[in-house]
Image (cartoon, rainbow, N blue to C red; front, top):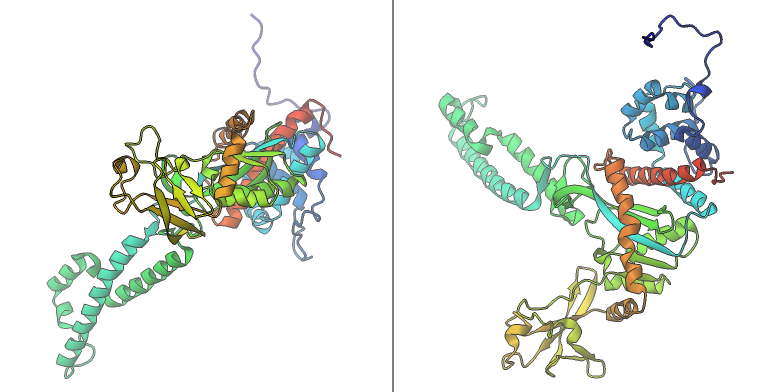
Length: 494
């Protein structure tokens, strides 16, 4: 039997080993180095240390290489990166055997949160240069990512108002008691406690009774704190606020309500390169379509031929804005609202009502007239005109048309024209098939981010920080796409 191979701990090198031999020629660390070395850090607005005192600082390019390597290999925290700099041979090679601590890495991230977006833009430019962005079709979508904070560390407007109400009563009652007590005991020395606090049993009962375990001073302090939190909620226009990350918002994530942020992305169809990235505090996508197309156009410097999005982006206001800016878009049209459950045939759906522009009225499928009634504000953003049926009581089909006791009402927004154009556009040959490609373009990218990179929760707090982290994540995805091209020998960096 041949001798088994075992570790020889007495082995010595005739010549010192070279790190170059311990990192394969096609390792991603080499590509990251080439990419960062091609960047002008000053032009990308990375901050440089101005003081000449103390130990020399690590260069911005070195720290950026470490961060990009970290996200490439799923090290998202500065502490993990600090350890990896000493344990992972490719990173030891990439850092030139430098070992910045986690504070240094964190300060670099914090100081350059806005500049990281410029690095993302550089990946888009590199992809454009190497013909990896087709500029023919792109898809917009958003994904919810949980905030770095516990749901338990949050408060809700209704709960605060209820607690504040009961606390106000308790504080007011207690102040009255103290005033009466002071009047009765004015002849006694000032240092005596109120009578109910001199009895230990009564004092214990007071402590055990819910909010009464707070002193009067603490109750007033709590009262001021609750009023401050309530004012924060009112100013932010939200019903929920997280104490750990006040800028996060309650939204539907993973099928339940959680505090988080809405990460938006625009993906080109050719090689699934991300060309637009942004984070929003809004849980819905209605108002992001035009902004995200503008974001992609800014990053690429060119107009995309067609942009597709799901029904979450359907908004007459956004369709009109996109049209005004010259963007060509297709959005899944949301089902027409106002249809009664009994109307299974759809005879009385909104699209069956015809608008008479000359008389400013709607005509229902049975020929009855809906006249203008009033103007109302929609979603706090724009005004709609409301038309209501005036012969609703005598209509034999009223139960099939509407549940409204006042008669069937139709809303007309100032963006009806844009919506109709969108519906007609999707009826043109080939457009439905083009719209159906949305899932294949953008959803695999979000799947890669959440499942392969394991990115399901933000590591930082505040909109500026999470936006920087999202740009780091999207930069990583683009680098992975570019790396494959470089590995094949088909990528030009210089």
